[in-house]
Length: 455
Image (cartoon, rainbow, N blue to C red; front, side, top):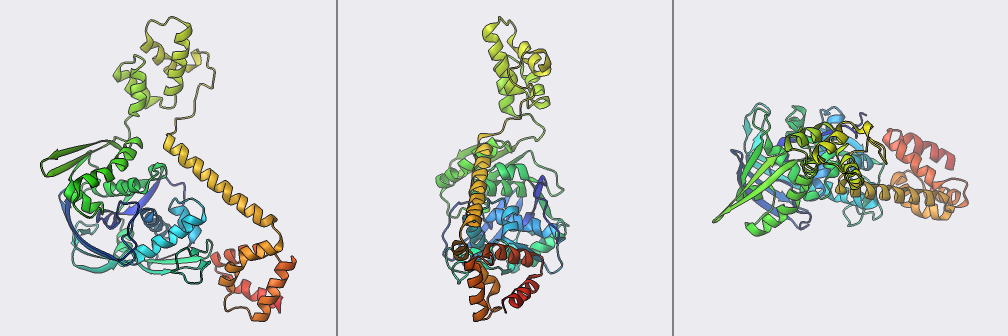
């Protein structure tokens, strides 16, 4: 089975599902059955979409899950039956969710929500050749969903968690799979996806990318949208202008901070509100670095050139310039700072002359949380490995029951429990072996050997 390269700089995303407003930008939404009908126009394209969601409209981290699933489908060669065979752990990683039990629960809830959502697209589903597909009756993003859970035997019960390494099988809807197979996708930058902290900003990033390009693939420098249309695309529901602007404010700020957007202008004239998005040129220098140099007297044109050519030197060079100016008389501050940036080897550095590129506070915080969660997970595994056989059995018995349900007789199960409690057999190692066998499609062989050993 082909694996997704998790360090690949881009993630593909099917354009239609991203553009139709199926996923709400809200972080939270009702879990009750929801129905909606949206008619909107963005960048000259008209959309008419109806949806019905038995567990509530997809929202929050559901966008991560959908993008992760699409990329696993592509990585596995776009199978003809539209099935993705993976595991909860692999899909969680592809969805950029940290390794913890809460995210496994969130993964199950999100998949259930997407699976129970059906849509009817009367106008707006575009084919790769430019034609539109109309009157699509009750199409789904996910047609079939199969997984194992641990904990509560009822897989629909709140709090039930997917078995991390067990096989997870998901069949994509036919229109979605065909669209990916035909290459009707957009590229999302992995670096931006990882740095964005809040789900609403990630949903808005995906939505903007879906509407940013001309039909021939040329990227727009700006996108102007009417708020009444845009709220439908964002899945924001009722027409309360002030509330929608407040909802959009934080995602706007985050996408500007991540240097995806240059700026956003809100124009309110009477009953109409227009949003003007300007996209940042990916080759443009960091405006914060340009401003930092200009604050030291460097001309704007020179500051722009330096920030583009030496982005990893600017902050340290400015610090050194200020420190040296406190002990020396410098007549031309701008020229002095510029020379430090261009010729760092000429100056007495208190630290290495090639500083590590600056990392945003948001990225640092996200990386720190991920490290802490990984440490906690490693500690939990280490503690369990060092625990006595009874504690290990109590922790692993639910998973063993799932894997061995219907395979062992009552006598064999009693023998297995006795072996594990006495320490003759490790329940922790047995679960690991079963998980690996499930992934390698040798589970029945391993269970057969176990039954022979217990007889």
